[in-house]
Image (cartoon, rainbow, N blue to C red; front, side, top):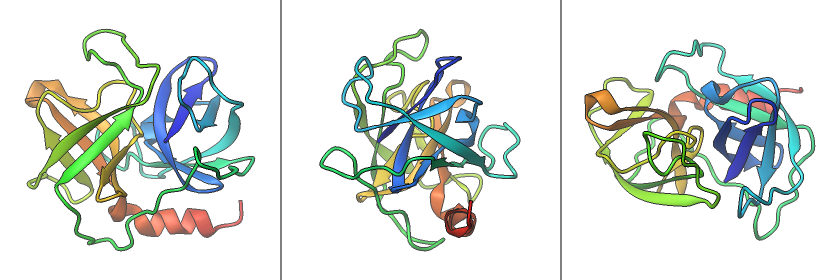
Length: 195
C-alpha cells in the first residue's frame, strides 16, 4: 500500500506499488502537489515522501466510473524491503478472478463525517457479478471502502484486480472499482515508454 497526499489541500488517497518506479491509483486523486509515502504504518508518522509525475488516463473526464485510473511515476525509485514491496498485476484482459476480495485504505471510518484512520484498515468483500460496463467491478452493501480510500486496491486472490473509484449511497451502497485488466495495454505502454 502507498499513502498519497497533497501537501497543499491535504487530500489523501491510497495507491499500490506495481514497480519500483510506478504507483497505480485512481485518476480522480490527481492534483498538483502529490507526494507518495511508502511503508506507512501510521499516517501521523510519515516517512520521507517521494515526488511523482502524475499520468492520468487520457480519457478520464472526472465522470464517475469512466477511465478512473492513473499511474504515478516516482522521481526516486522505491527501495524494496520487508515493508515496501511491489504487487503483481493481472496478466491478461479477460483474466478470471475469485469473487471473495479485500479492500484497504486509510479512509473515513464513518462515511457521513470526517473520520480518517491513522492506521491501515482492511475489509473483506464479495463481488457482484452483474456490472453495467466491462471496465468496472462492483460490490454492494454498507460495508466497504469510504471517502479517502479512493485509489486503493481491490485484492482478489493476492492480485489487485480493481481500484477503488466511487461509492454510490443513493443506489443501495454500491462501491465501484476500475477494472485494471481492461487497461493493461495503456498501462504497459506508459510503463515501457521513456519518460
